[in-house]
Image 1 (cartoon, rainbow, N blue to C red):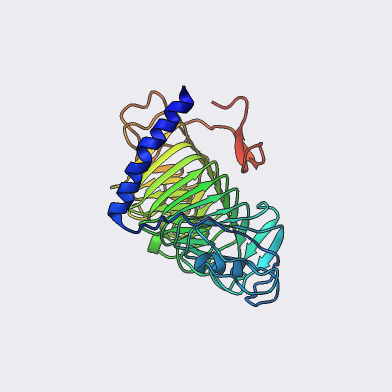
Image 2 (image 1 turned 60 degrees about the horizontal axis):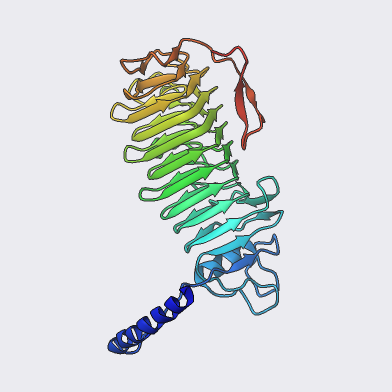
Length: 374
C-alpha cells in the first residue's frame, strides 16, 4: 500500500515539476562547493613548486582555491570551507599568515604542533570564518594581536596555546578581537604574552573590541603597563565561563589592572581571578589588582572567586560596580568594590585557600581549593 501511494505521488508531482521548469526556461542547479582536505607535509615556510605542501601554501590554496603547484605533494586547490591538517612539527615563519577565506587549521596537539612567528610579525591575521585548533601559536611581535589578530568573521580557537607573543607598544599581545568580529576560545591557554600603551587597554593577554567568549580556558602570566590579562572595550561583549585569570600584571606606576579591565559588557560565570598584580593608585585609570569595572560598564559576576590579588596602592581584588544580579561569589577584599545591595549569597572577606596553579585534571591548569575552603 505504501509503495503504490509513493508511485502515485511521483506520477502527480513529475508533470507539475516539468511544467514549472518549462515555465522558467533553462535552469542550472548549483550544488554547494565541497571542502578540500589540504595536508601540510613540510615545516619549511617556502612557497615553491617543490613537491611539499607548506602551511603558507596550504592557506593560500584555501584562500584562492588554487593548487600551490603541479608537482606531486603540492597543496591541492581549496574548495568551500577547507580543512588544513598540520602534523607534529615546529614551523618557523618568515612573515604573518593571512586567513581570508573560510577554513579550519588543525594541528596534532598544542604540545606537538607549533607555529612560531620568530619575532618577525604577528603570527595569524584572520578576516574570515575560520578555526585554529590543537596547536601552539608563539613568537609574534606586531601588535595589535601579535599571536592572533581577528579583524572580521566568526572564529574559534580550541585546544590551543597562545604564548610568548607581544611587543613594547600596542594591545592584545596574545589575542586581539576587532569590532564586528566574534571569537570563541575553548580549552585554551593564553599565557606569557605582552602588551603596552593606553590604546586598547595595552592588554598583555587579550584585547577585545568585538564579541568574545572564553570557556574552559586559562589566561595567565601576561603583562602590560595598563591591563595584564584581559581588556574589554566600551563597545565590546565579553563572556568568561569556567576560566582562570592568574598571575597577570598591569605595572604602570600610577595606573594598572592586573586581571580584567571591563569597560563594556562582561558576564563572568565560574571564573577565578587570583594572584594578579595591578600596580596602580590612580582612581581614574585602570585601577585594581584583580577586576576593574568601569563606571559606565556592566559587569555581571556569578559563582566566581576574586581573591589574593595585589593592588599595590589601590584596591586589591575588585574596583567598580557589579550588577544587582551578581550572585554566589567569594570576594576576599571588598575595598573599592561596588557590591550589589543584596549580598546574602556572597562569601566576603575570607581566603578561598586556593592551591597553586597546576594540572588538576581539566583542559588547562587551575587553582584547586583546599578541602577546608569556605
